[in-house]
Image 1 (tube, rainbow, N blue to C red):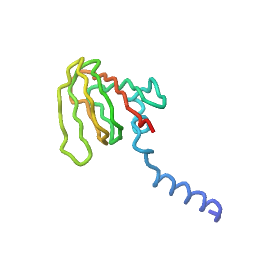
Image 2: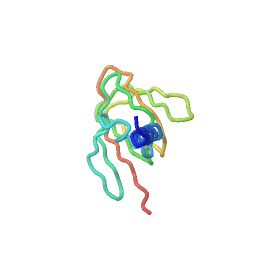
Image 3: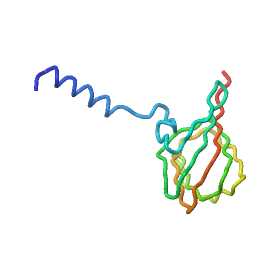
Length: 122
């Protein structure tokens, strides 16, 4: 292996090892769960669909509103806190402050949520 090839491989390895999700954006962490419907200078709107047993790794949200389209059972583990498991009824709407968390559908039904992230006005 020549020196040029070795340098290219070392650079590629360093980039792979140090790459991390930018700001833990849920679209980057798992775009199969989060479906972006609208993004502008004020909000991002998602339809989120968790199949039974499906989970998403730690990701980050600014202040956001969550509305349950269909109900189910969800485990949320906010970074630095104990996991919280909850039954979410269809039609439930919640405001959640900015946070980083992971989530898992621990129920037997597909959970569909409308998530609206609020962007800073500045």
